[in-house]
Length: 151
Image (tube, rainbow, N blue to C red):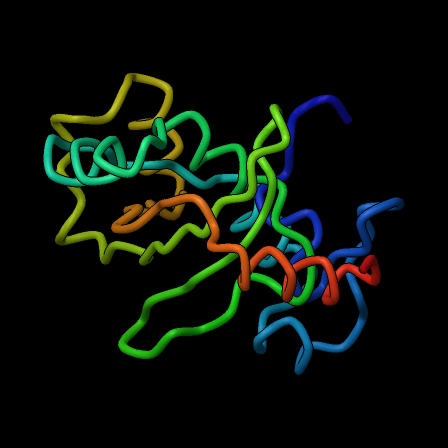
């Protein structure tokens, strides 16, 4: 499949085969069809606040999206209050830390969605709001390499 599946390395997805695990417990209580559906239909919502905030750290929305779309275990990690943090590499190899939340339907600004995103949203797609993205510190990079099994 050429379309990147958001969270292809997230709980319940095997990166190489893109098959779901059979345990509904490991899939957060969702059955196979529900989990697959949610993982494919993810929309990013950008506004002046979050795009300007990450730009202050030298990160573009495309870079943040790239890292989220290719997250691999053990990421994303919960950070409390419905927030998630993950570490990953951009397509240019930069190491980023990215934080996001899933927006409730009421908090989605549908006027900011592109026509295809609006269709996905109406079909049940989940909307992510990136609230943080910045290059990893040296210590974070070292920890990231250890997590990935490289020194």
